[in-house]
Image (cartoon, rainbow, N blue to C red):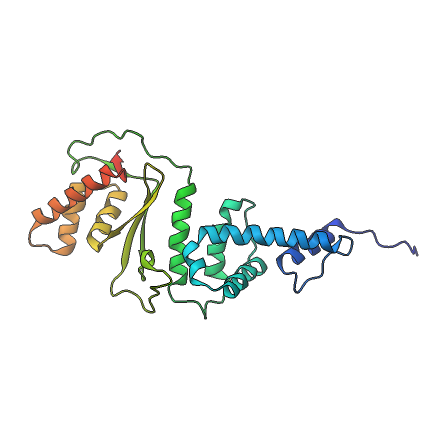
Length: 251
């Protein structure tokens, strides 16, 4: 039997390296790498991850004290196995961690919805989708076939996530669903519009391919509204505003 030492398996070293980077408090560093170097690697990796998440979720960062924030980032690094090597996708991975792996017992009840809202803002800001530079005039906007912007998202939450701040942290859901349209404007700024249930329904029906007229008529039926012309006029005004904002276009 040979007394030769077992050759070092690079995969074992790589696993040790990754485990130490994720959780240095509970995993030994690879024995053949200088401690000073491993500390530098660990700190650089952590600071990069922490920085990306802080930039992607600025309101959540403001709501948390330093100890709680850093404990959450370390927990994310330990528990979540990211499926992408792209830094700009870290925010999506963090959202997945909040939904599937984080112990949320001590989080505010609005925590995940706020994170989702902030992630949508970030996703729209880095999207490679484009909107028409000079949209064609739809003429009769109620009769035109319309498309919605690929840079617009209709969202529904239980909490008024667009209002949450260190000074306003609701402990219970709003009395009715919160409808928001978040979109990237032509100047690349991220804008939100607060919708009521009717405007949210109108946008949803337009997204499904209905004309403004058909959508308004369907809403009249659903509401059993006694004055169809009021609903139709309101829908026309909304569609014109959305067209001016480049949220909808002629198909």
